[in-house]
Length: 230
Image (cartoon, rainbow, N blue to C red; front, side, top):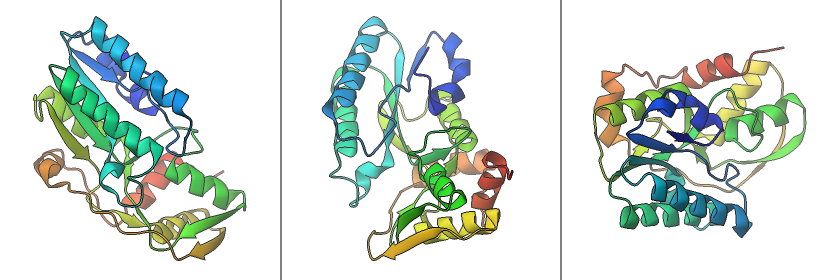
């Protein structure tokens, strides 16, 4: 069973016919949201879905930003932590995936890569936090890792981070996009941001097992795969 219709939900379409697992991928897609209503709707929907499917394993998608000092006080991150805590206290069988920034065929302008690509290609002005880092991951790689974990009953009743083994400086991400599209972005550098410390050690054996290569060309390959030049 799959709840949701966004990027992550569509990636897990094979689970629609799975009667043992509930993929709950219906959440607030804009991490900058500050209104209370969307967060409350997500919680109430989760409670309703679980009430009708309490015999199934619940899979929830949280955010690795919970451990990020830059973002931990945002309403979005606080909400995700509240959702995690409710699941831990109320659900009999679950796995919580803390994701970073999955990239796929998605038009959501609020995602990290979509935002930077749109601003650079359109020559729109934007601000770059020169000390900030972001963790970018191909959604196909994210799915392969999550599917392996679920298929092998790993991390039962646990929270596990699924992320790229390397976080990139935002300035590098911007430069990769500029080089890829052969155009200069209209941005201003500001002295803000901090490094990310994302622990991918628990999934390292899975990354190796699946032969996923987070190499120096990973960002370029993502751009080439999901952002074809016109």
